[in-house]
Amino acid sequence: MKGIILAGGHSTRLYPVTRSISKQLLGVYDKPMVYYPLTTLMMAGVTEFLIITRPDESELFKRLLGDGSHWGLSIVYAIQDQPRGLADAFIVGEKFVDGDPVALILGDNIFYGEGLRQIIRQPSEQADGACVFAYYVNDPERYGVVDFDTDGRVLNLEEKPKVPKSSYAVTGLYFYDSQVCDIVKDLEPSARGELEITSVNNVYLDAGQLRVEVFGRGIAWLDTGTHKALLDASNFVATIEHRQGLKIACPEEIAYRLGLIDEEQLLHLAHAMAATEYAEYLTRLVQQERRYLSF
Image 1 (cartoon, one colour):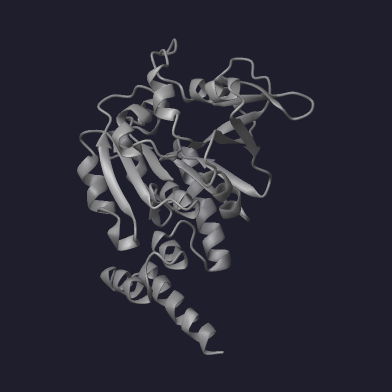
Image 2 (spheres, rainbow, N blue to C red):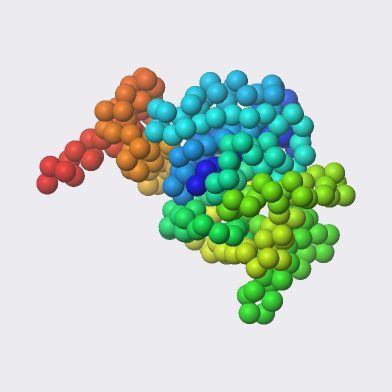
C-alpha cells in the first residue's frame, strides 16, 4: 500500500503564523508537524509516500524530508496549485497511485494510543473496499459525520452538517483500494466547489464496500487547525514524552524498529544532529538494544 500526505492549503486560521510557512512544517513540541502523519502511515506498513504541497512550499518539504531513503522510505512530491477539496489528492496523485491500494492522511492530524499500530495495520492489508475511522467529538459539525443505526451499522456520512445526526466524526485517515482514483474522477464538485472526501466514502458505502472503525477512548486524535489546538497538541506530546522518556512520531526510531534501517544508519542519523536531546535519544536506543541483547 502507498501513502499520500496532504499538506497543501493556506491554513488561514493560523494566520499570521502561517503567512510565511506551511502549517505542516510548524513544530509540534519537538518535531515538525508532518512527522506525525508520516510515522502514522509508517506504522501501517507504508514505505512509499507522496507529499502534496503548495507550489511555493515544495522545496521546504524536500529540504526537511528529502527522498526518504535515510529512513528506508521513498518520498516523492506533487503540487496542488489551489485547494479543490481533500479528494483532489487522488487527481493530483493518480500517477503515483498507479492502480495500487492507497492511504490518505491529512498533514495536520495526530494519532496516538495503545494498540494504534495494530488497529491501522489491518486496513492497510485489505485488498478491496475502503476503511475510515470515526471518533467521538463534542463539535461534530466541523467534520464529516457518521450516522449509525441502533445496531451500529453505518447509514450515511454527511459533510459538516448543521444538525449532526451523531457525535462521531470521520478522522483524517483513509484507506482505499485501487478504485479510488476512478471514483474521484466521476465526482461532481459540492456546493462549496470542492471534491469532498465524504462523497468518495459514500460511493464505497453505497456499494457495500466501506468499513467504519471507531477509535475508542484509548486513542487520541488531535487536530492542529487552530492556535489553541496546536498548543494543546504540543503540550500533549511533551507530557507523554517527559513522563515515559519515549518519543512520539520519531521516524528514525520507527524505521529502526521496523527494520527499514540498521544500527549503523541510526547512529549516523543521530550524529548528523550533533549534541541535541533528539540525537541523544537515538543513540540511547542503540545502547539499550545492545544491553538487552547482551543478557
